Image 1: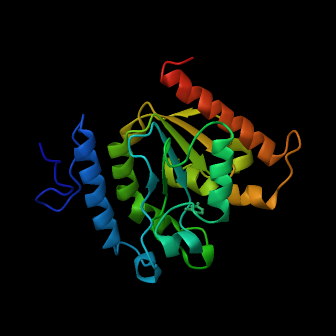
Image 2: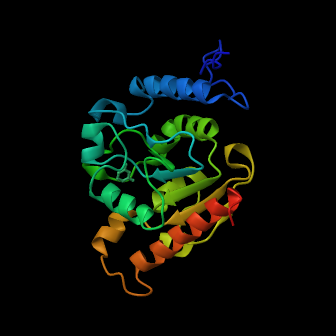
Image 3: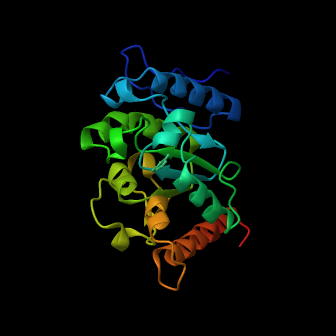
Length: 223
Ligand code: URA
């Protein structure tokens, strides 16, 4: 069996067939990466060095979504490989999650916003079909949203991450139906707030990640 084409005859994104085999899923993800590589749906497509689609394992039950690529990510074509990505990796590792083996990592926008500015609403919505396709194909049970922009981009909720973090949300309707979503502080914020004292952003994030690890274990039937 071959994977269904990404676009239908009218040029619209086709529905993702349920129960794709691993090889059909991987093929569909490769096809998606090619489409993203040629994407000019917004102006970020003309200033990027590389499109940044994903890293990690598409079979993982955990998806991590960030804001958008920074300079290192733009150079390497991989998400979360700069300083904040290294911190993210270490924090995930501290709760037993290997970012390349146990997670699939991507961003709200796939091209670097100049000067690392926040992506605009237009840029986020231009990139949304690609992210939705990734969610449909990877089919994660748990989604970790790093920072306020990831929450805004995926859930349309604008608000301080201090209030949103650490609270589980259950996806309702559409591509998020039934998925568990956990907002956390963005690692770049944690780089600027290095204290690990009780109640500090880093301490809170470590607890949020422990909660994520527990949820994954529970879903895997091992708790
Ligand atoms: N920050 C993000 O939100 N994503 C990346 O890929 C890198 C830094």
